[in-house]
Amino acid sequence: MARTDRLDAQVLAHFVEAVRQPIRPLWDANTQALGAVLVRRWQVMGILVAEKNRLRRATPEVRPSIEAHIGWLEQ
Image 1 (cartoon, rainbow, N blue to C red):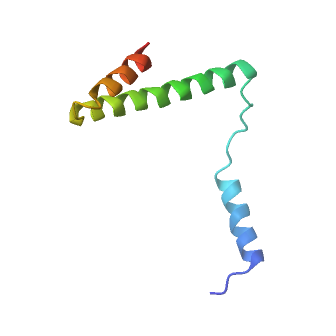
Image 2 (cartoon, one colour):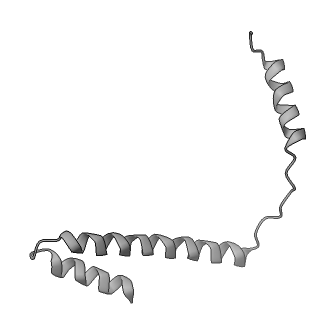
């Protein structure tokens, strides 16, 4: 079956009608700021987990550096 722009448009229009999503308001400035802080916290927690995993396999030469970084992250 040959696809055309018109057929594609009809399929998309049908999908939009069938799966109509409610319109949600945008977050206010405070909610956006809180979201950004939470995302950053999750990122830092991921780094902390990675450093703790790295510490388990670290050689004695790099252990102090990793331990210092873990200490800094946990502040």
